[in-house]
Figure 1 (cartoon, rainbow, N blue to C red):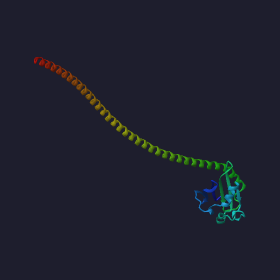
Figure 2 (cartoon, rainbow, N blue to C red; figure 1 turned 30 degrees about the vertical axis):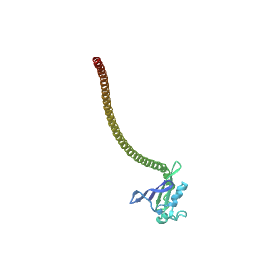
Figure 3 (cartoon, helix red, strand yellow; figure 1 turned 90 degrees about the vertical axis):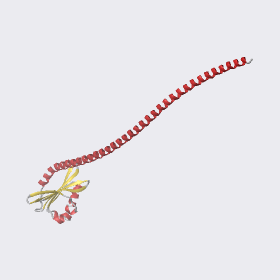
Figure 4 (spheres, helix red, strand yellow; figure 1 turned 180 degrees about the vertical axis):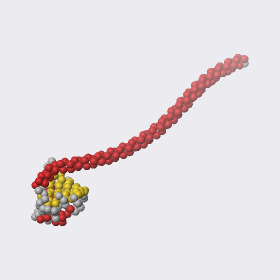
Length: 231
């Protein structure tokens, strides 16, 4: 084969993964991004994808069915083989090979070789896709963890701010409570002083009553003596 494509069946849409060709007896392969439909023999690929059966053409440019394909008309390939690679009865990818030197280059023996390699290719592609999906999941999980970490850090800062605010409020409450306690103590002292003053006033009042009573008795005695002396 002089040229080959590895076509991926991506969500029921064909996409070229790798393009390879022989140049100066060297095999050159590259990842490609197909922008034109003429860059792939779409009629052949679509048939293989739809039927999941291989197509072998001895001279594609003169084939009645596929000779009018834009790719075939532009590049005029001779020998062509297009082989579906199945995995669990589902189309995994398509191998497309062509030889522009001689017609009938792809014999039954070469088709049997593709049959042998197909399962290995399917497994390799599946493993590669699984690894790619795993990497994507790891990236998503890493992004999710980073986002969650930022969110938790924000919540931590909010909690710290709320804690500081509560501490300030608690300090203010403590200060006000201490002021109230101090005022209560002052009131208790003043109340004790008032009680002492009241007790002192009661004692003074009692003394005054005794003094007044004593003076009244003395005046009565003096008055009686005075009256007796005037008789």
